[in-house]
Structure formats: structure tokens, C-alpha cells
Image 1 (cartoon, rainbow, N blue to C red):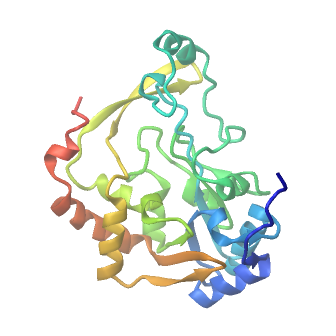
Image 2: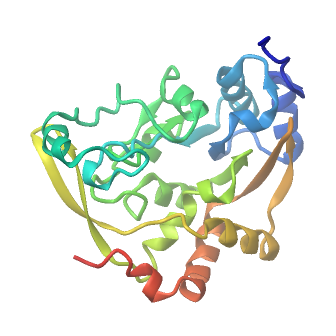
Length: 270
């Protein structure tokens, strides 16, 4: 069968830049960006064009930050889509390569974050499963000091972004991708879980706060209803722009009211 023609709109580095400026992205600011490339339309230049447009909008004094998560560096006993045979578990634990900020590719966050990760001058944080990459003058400060037992909490880049007055840009992504909401989980009663992962000297298990993005779409809907959120379009994509600090503060209150304790305790404390 012949390949179907591409569907539009036709999107370029220049049109994305113009859309971002119209939305209010400011030169010199720090921006945490969650993306869905396919939602934009037919992007001439693909993820490289998107990253260039973001850097154009931020200018030389701005800093671009993206999640570069590596959730596959985890215990195979917990894998579901797909699961692997129990007989493989010990071999996987014994042979899985440890996280390397320079070479471990991101997974599950899209091609734009992976493009940022490999961008000239990009820096990446140290957490083996929930790292962030950044490009710009504040990159070293933001990604430095990411504690390896604090996925998305007070010793992660999220807390630094909150203090710096950074904003979140959902570029075609939904609120279920909004990592800022996870920082609020660390400030509300949450159980602890054991997290297994490869390490340079073998398999390790650390204790972490239990996190989940379940109901984040509902949380985002209420946040957008009750707080100022800039809304618009870039190409065909829906775009949302708001401060990290606003999202975290709202999520703290929302989670206390709307996430029942019995739901939280699905992962029992250790």
C-alpha cells in the first residue's frame, strides 16, 4: 500500500518560536518543558527544530530543562508491559548496565527530551531513574546535587526549579506528564517503598517515597480551573504555561483532599 501523505499543519522552527513568544515565553527565563512531538503537526526538522525553537525563545540567558527518565533501570519483577519470565529476573539484575548520565538514553518521555540530552553543552542530573537534562547558564545549578535516593523531591532539580521561579511548559503533553505535581507528593503523607536498580558495584535497593501520576489529569483540570494558566496553541498542539511553584502549592492541597489514604497505601510502607 502507498504511504499516506503527511497530515498538517506544517510546523517549522520559526512558527514554533513565534507561537511560544505569543504565549509569553520570555527570554532569560528557566523553563521545564514536557512535550509531545506528534501533537504539533508535521514538524519540518523534527525534534531538532523543536529544541532550536525553544532555545530561540529563551535566548542565550534562558535555560531549558526536560525530564530524561530511565524507568527501565528497575526491578524486572515489577515490569508489566511486557513482563519478563521469572527465570530471567536474577540474570537481568546481575547484568543490567548501571546508569551513566552521559550514555544512558532516556525512555518514555519522547524524542524531544532525548534530543536535549544529547545537545551540545547539555548537563544531566545523577538520579538513575528520574534524571533531568538542562541547557543554558543555570543548567549546572539545576541538575547538580540530585540525590540518588530522592527521585522528584526536595533534593531534586524540581525543588531548585521551584526556588528559581521557573515555569512549566506543557507543549502538547497533558497534566499526567507534569512532574512538578510529584514534588507535592513529598510534602504530603506518603508511604515509602523499596526501589531496586542496577548500580556500578552491583544491584542495590534504596528506600524512596512512593509516587504515582494517577489522577494527575484530574488534578490538572482543577488547577487550571482555579489558578492562572496561560493556554494557547503551537502548531496543532495544546499548550499550557504556568509557574512550577503554583503547581506544587496547589497540588499539595489537592492531594490532601482528594487522594484517600487507602489509595496511597496500595504500596505499603516498608
